[in-house]
Amino acid sequence: MVANVLQASAWINPSLKTNEARIVITALPLYHIFALTSNCLAFLSLGARNVLITNPRDFKSFVAELKKYKFNFISGVNTLFNALLHTPGFETVDFSALRVTFAGGMALQGVVAARWKQVTGLYSDPGLGIDRNLADRHRQSNRPRFQRVDRPSRSLDRHLDPRRCRQGTAG
Image (cartoon, rainbow, N blue to C red):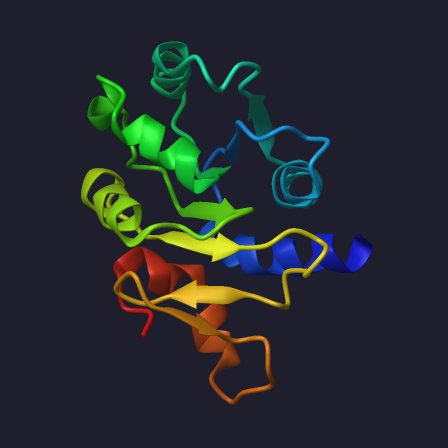
């Protein structure tokens, strides 16, 4: 777990601005290793505020909570992102501070990823929990194709740079 937290922190840190408040939206249960590692523990070391969504299935309230914060990071699963995209008012959330969207637990459908990009302005980067560890990463390039980048490569840093995913140039 320590290695995963260090890897996640190293991957996330460059995408956050120095004087910007660090706010993380946590809608996945913290007893699941993905949320525990990527949301709670990694962002603890980065000095972030974690906003726990206690009932993420109440999407109307979830969207109301999102509107209260200029958040930098949100993680979820395909079904959660899809449901948010279909919740009235989600498109009016302020995504100007959002730096990283991280999808885990299951494959992110291309149609969901494309719609997420349209609404939020950035792609969602798929990842896995500690059972595969963050070094065993996948990266999406221009939807819906996935590419493994867990093998040593001269271009590994380019693939793991979240700023490239935000700009839609990872590929």
